[in-house]
Length: 356
Image (cartoon, rainbow, N blue to C red):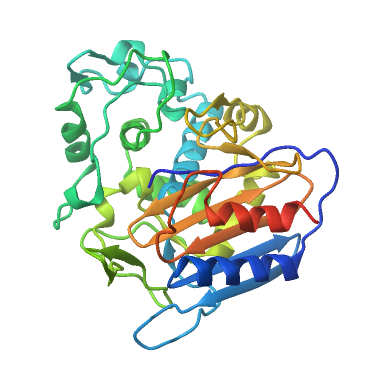
C-alpha cells in the first residue's frame, strides 16, 4: 500500500509513444519475471490498452478490457478528494484539529489530536503510528476502521505533528472515520456517492465485508513467498479500508485522475490545496506529496500528478500531466524494487512522457 507516483505541469506538450510504452511493459514483465502487467493510456476520448504476461498463470489467460485489480493506495486520492469536497461545502476545515471532528477518539503515547490538523493528516505530517508493519499481520476476519485505529494507537507517536513527513496508512484510516463522523454515512457509501457514481466508474468499488475475491473479469495477484510464486488474489480488503481497499480497473483510474485534474471532482481552490506539496523523504527528490496527490519528476523535466498503490499481488499507479494523456499501470506481482529510481512502473512513465 505504500509507494506512490505523481506528476505536475509540463514545460512543453508531450505526446504518447505507444510503441515505446508497449515495449517497455513487455521488457519489464520479462526481465523482472513478473506474472503480468496492464497499461491503459487515456488521451481525451481515446483509450489505448497494452498488456504483457498472463492474468492467470494456471490457465495462461490474457487480460480482458476492464480487468479488476486492487489499486491499493490510489484509494487515498479518492478519500482526500472526498474530504476536500467537504471542505468546499464548509463542513470541514483543513487547518482545524482532528480533535474537533473526532473528540476524545485519538489518544495514545505522545499523541495529541488537538495539535493534528486535517491538512497534516492528509499530507502524512500527523506523526500518528502505523497500524500494520507488513501484510503478515493482516487478519482473516473483517475488521472495522475503529479496530484498525486502535491497533495504531497502541503504539507511540512517530514525531510531533508537522515536524516532518512520513507516509503512514493510519492517516487515511482516520480520514475515513472523519468522513463518517461528518456525514453520518459509511465512508465507502459517501465516496461512492460523491465521486465514483457521478464519474460513472462502474468497475470501481469497496469490497463488502468478507468479499475477499474480485469481481470478474479480474487479474490474479502474485507474490513470491518462501521462494515460491504464490497466488494472493484473495485478500481481506477491510484491513486496508480507506487507506487502500479499493478495487478498480486501469480504465477507471485514468478516468478518475483525468476528471480530478480537469476540475470535475473538487473545485479549483481545493485542487490547488491538494497540489501544495512537501518533499517525500528518501525518494532522491523525485517525489513530493500534497493532500492525497503526489508529484513525480521525470528525467526529461516533465512533472505529473497522481498516486500509486502497492498491496498484496498488485502494484499500480495512475498519473497525468495537465496537457498530456493520463496513464495507469498495474503489475500483478511485486517488482524487484519499488524505489522511485528503480521501479519499472517509472520506466513506463518515461516511455510515455519523455519521447526519445
